[in-house]
Image (tube, rainbow, N blue to C red; front, side):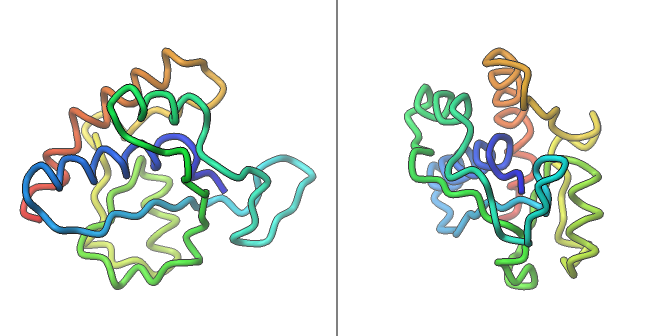
Length: 146
């Protein structure tokens, strides 16, 4: 289902930035994939993995944040109409959320001018560092007016 690398990092960085700005907000993270591996059909909301990717956990720790208890969740567990802003990692996720009924006018693609946030899965720790840097740089714009 995803929800192990980019979006958990985005969640903890957004929580930190909003708190530092004095904004009281609920920030959540979820994934869109119903199938993780070829041949392993999964029902929506079922995940073979039980926490965030180890690289994401380590990068969060380096920033004084905690992803140790993050449990990947599927988009089907959320009523997207309840959220003021939905920040996504790329155009593919945006389309998937609109198909799930998310209000298109509330969706913001993080780092949209560069086609979103590159997926670091399978690319090693340095790719996660690069991903985290892009997220930190792009989030303030996405969080404006909250």
